[in-house]
Length: 206
Image (tube, rainbow, N blue to C red; front, side):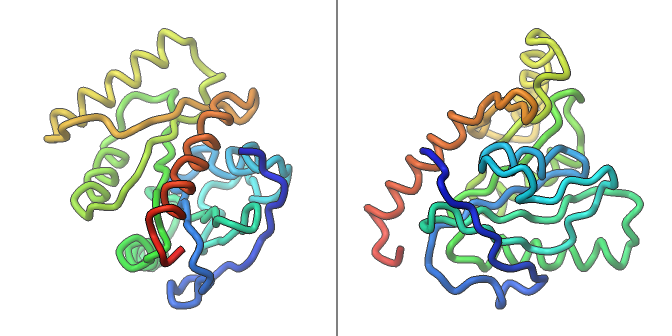
């Protein structure tokens, strides 16, 4: 897939106010400072589509971007950032949960994980919630340029082991990426293209 247009549509904190277009949506979510904005900018070929910041927790709304006029990329707030107040965090959690559990247009979520670190409980817990709620998702490992191939393989294996320990039958599909080097870009966009084709072919609503 080649992305030719990427347009910001709306930011809000209420799922009811999300776009009414019945187009497939792909939601991007992860711990704050995981490199989400950089990844979004990389795959859409836009330097400033998603706002990057040295201050984690900057994304605090549901952000919709229309891609190629036929699908939405949804940028969601990060989870697990300690310096966000408890009240703010509970509001985040509520509209993130509302989005995942009620948004009919959502066809796949991408859970972003920093490949530099070994398996983190907060990521495992979030993916367990996704699995228990039957929300389809893939994993995107970010910042692959920061460590060696050996360490990447070791950390991915650690995640597999942790998930199997938590009663997963298999590891969700995953992508290893680097926003700096555009690693994983083609694989990720090809996957979205494949899913879009299936969605449009099999679902009369889209």
